[in-house]
Picture 1 (cartoon, helix red, strand yellow):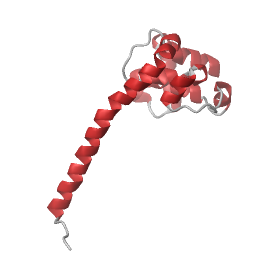
Picture 2: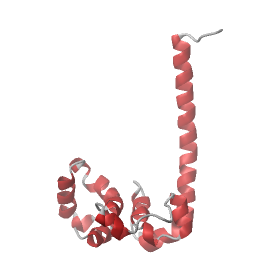
Picture 3: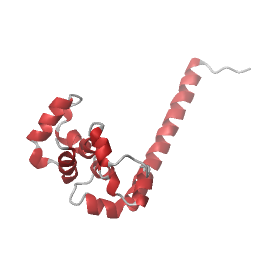
Picture 4: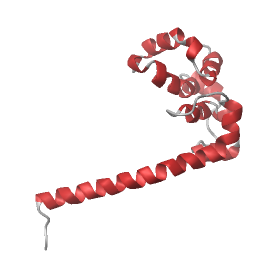
Length: 142
């Protein structure tokens, strides 16, 4: 039985990794395009004026999961039985965290992962926060 040498095995692993990366890079934009096609109306309604890029619109949509149309929920992989925003708030602000994630990444990356520093940073940049983040913070009561 043939056993590959160390260099042949390394070559095979690298080839498999490059192939996997090519598949991900090829399918990734299509998946995002399909999500945006299914969620275009929701994005306009819930995330109006938000600058695209950096996952901001997807974060906004996920932060407003309770208000999404069924097609958009399905495209984003959000179950119909997802907890309501008030339930999430009681468990630690999941809706606010999701809605504000793009703002944290854009404005407060250096404060991560310290929650107190992130909160202070978001307060300092209140005027620069997305509408979705502001709304989620108000709804969460923080």
